[in-house]
Each structure stands twice: as structure tokens, then as C-alpha cells.
Length: 203
Image (cartoon, rainbow, N blue to C red; front, side, top):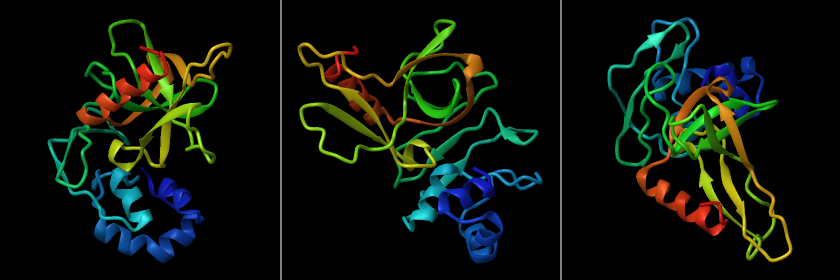
């Protein structure tokens, strides 16, 4: 995340955010690319700072910085977050459970449901949590800071019911639709995702 992204997520103009919070934020959240003009910060740490939550410790493993993007980056979270971030766009094969920014007519966060075994990827959009009770109609899986998402969202599936065509948040994407890898689901959350898809009759 850039400081512009963090200011937007905080609900402030960037100049106001920098004046009020910039110094404290930079003292608590390490910049990922200290030699670059455009500062980049880990989304999970930045989101935790915004919410006043404990900031997950990160141990960097030889990040490769190219231009103003972090390609081929790797992270290992210390205890406190369960996410494990690995590879980005440059060389590693994409895998089920990765969280990406995608552009398919609009820019949205998606979670990959299929790996790079074909020219297209099956994915599910990350959407806002439901504001009403969904019991018997749909099920949700929370996606947030520990998965790399800059906002709190969910994966949602409609539960099959006779005579109804369920709403779906599934999308089919090409590699060109995927803009930036922001995180990944932990192995435990991948299991929850599989359960969610089975509930919705999608697997």
C-alpha cells in the first residue's frame, strides 16, 4: 500500500493524514522499499495500524524490488497472523488461495480458486460483509488484513435452494486481468474455503 492508499482507507486527504499520523505511522510500520521515492507498506500492517490493532511482525526474506512494484516478494509472518505471503507476478506459478487485485471492467479484490494449469483462472470476488442475517440463504468467509486485504471483506456463496438460481460472485479471469498479488489464504483458511464452496455446490 502507498501512503495515498493508507490515507484513503483512513478517510482522510493524504496531506491531512501525513500531518496528523505520518510520523507515528512511519515509526511503527517499516517501509518495504526504503530506497524508492514512492514508499510502499505491507497491507496487513498498515490495516492493523489504521484499526488500532496489534501490528503483525514481518520477517523479510530477500525481497526483489523492481521499479516501483514489489515483484517476487516473499514474507513470513511472525506469530499473530496466520497468513503466509509468497511470490508475486514475475515468475512463480499462481496458486489457489492467492489474493489479487484484478481489473475485469472494474477493479476488485479476488481470491483465486484455480491455479495456473490453464489459460484462464477461476476466482471469486471479495465483497462487503452482509448487513443482514444470511442464515439459510448464504454463507461467508472473512477476508482481511492477515490475508493481505487492505479492507475487511468476505467471500460469499448462496446456498442452493429448489426452484431458485443462486447469485454467484465467481469470475473467470486471464493473467492480463490480474494486476497485483496482495496476499494469500493460510492453509487453515484454504480448508474453510473448500468447505464454503461445497456448501454452495460449487465443488
